[in-house]
Length: 342
Image 1 (cartoon, rainbow, N blue to C red):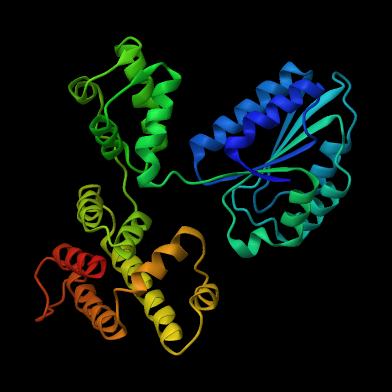
Image 2 (cartoon, rainbow, N blue to C red):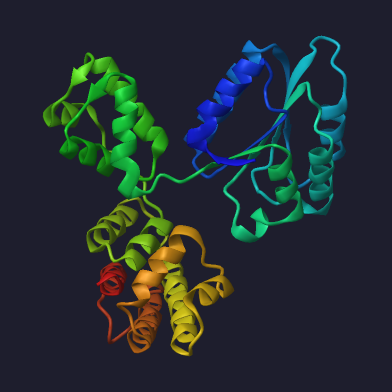
C-alpha cells in the first residue's frame, strides 16, 4: 500500500487498535528531518507494542544481502517482537539486493517490523520489480520535499504544535532565513518555544530570535530559473556566491538545464506531445510542470543563444579573455539565469 506521510498518523492509530505494527514499512524521502521523524514515530509505537529488540543494517556498496534474510527470519532469544531496519541511502540495491528485497516482500515475518529507509526514488527505479514488490507487500510512505512555496505553511503548522502563531510576514521572514534547511527551521521553531510563551508572536519578536541559516544549492537555482521566479534567482545566486559554491558547478548546472529545455522544446516544436518529450528526457514530477510552463515563454533561438553565452562565461571562470562577456562571471551567470526566468 502506498500512502503519503500525512497518513502516518492513521497507520500508527491502526497499529495501536490492532496491537500490532504493519510487518513492512518503507519510508522514501530526501527530506532528512521528516524521514527521521517518521522513523522515530514508527519505532516509538513499535516499542510501546512490545517490539523491544532492534537490529540496524546499513546497505552500502559492499553489503552482504543475505544478512537481510537472516535478520528478518531469525528467532529472537530475548523478545517475541523485533524491529529490523534496512538503510539503503543510494536507493540502488543492485542485482543481489533487488533479489533479496523481492524475496523479503514475498515472506515478510509477521512479528517483525521491517523498516526500509530509502531516498526519494526516480520514476524508473520506483517502477523496478523490487520496489513494486515492496509497495504491494507493505506500507510505502512517500515524504515529499518541502518546496519554498509551502515552507511558510509548514513553519506555521510546526508553530501551532507548540501553541504559537505568527503573522504571515513573520512566516515569510523565517522561511527566507532557513530556506533549504529543515533542520535549521526545526531548531529556530524550537527556539521560539523556549524564548516566548504560548500565544501570538510579533514580527519583531521573530526577528530578534531567528538567525540567518539559509542554505542554497544549484537545484534551487535551476528550479527558480525554469520556474520564472526572478526574485529567487537573484537571491539564490547571491547566496551561492556568499557560501563559496564552486563556479564550474553552477556553470554546468545552468548549461545542463538549458540543454534540457532545448531538447524538449525541439521535440515539442516537431510535433511530439510534451509528456512524451519530457519522459524521453527523464523530466518528471515538479520539474515537469516547471518545464511545461517555461516552454510557453521561451523559444529555441533564445535558448540556443543563451547556451552560446555559457561558453564565454566558462572562459572567464578559467581566467581567459571573453570579449563579449563582463569581467565578472558571477554577474554574467546571474544575467543569464534572470533572462531565462523572464
